[in-house]
Length: 112
Length: 142
Image (cartoon, chains in turn cyan, red):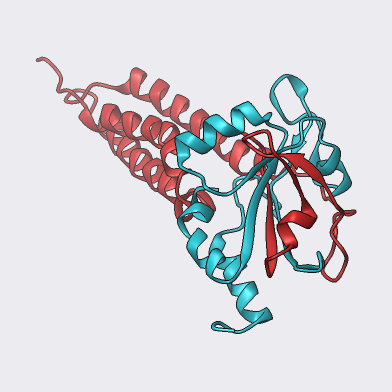
């Protein structure tokens, strides 16, 4: 998330919105946003309803056996169609913003 | 004659322990997180020093100390590296397959969730007046 914030202006320039989604409640998201200087929305899915709908649930992987999201990144076009998706096989390895920007470049070459 | 301090054993052990505990630091940067080569580099350096120290302790025990504590430290170091490798190569790979996740070309499911200010945000809001959106699902800070 830190790396997406660092390159947020490049997403802004392309008209692409960035959002984070987790089971954290809004209070924690507000604290983290302030602390880390995030200017994009962090959305709260405390019951993991949407996380389940996207089938990116990691059951019992959170504290006290709570269900949480596994790391996953989706790039959608303005019609909501998935154009690129990254489902990591290693919790520590997440998509980097440059990968998403690269996928964007292939959709619409830079400058368009 | 008092035997000499066998410094490579101590330094090697400290470097191995540092290799383990520096993971939290190196995990902040994708280049040292995607594969923790910096930690394994420290393990390698520490291990080499430990082996060097052990060779001295067993090769010339009349000059250098460390036959017993060097062996204990080396065994602990091996266990630490084994534990680290288990977490990195096994535990971190225990991710659900997510076979039902939206695929390329499919429409992403709609949602309506509260942002960090308690304001409801829908997928439609994100996609109106934009060329698209990146949804980043993450484990959370708790």
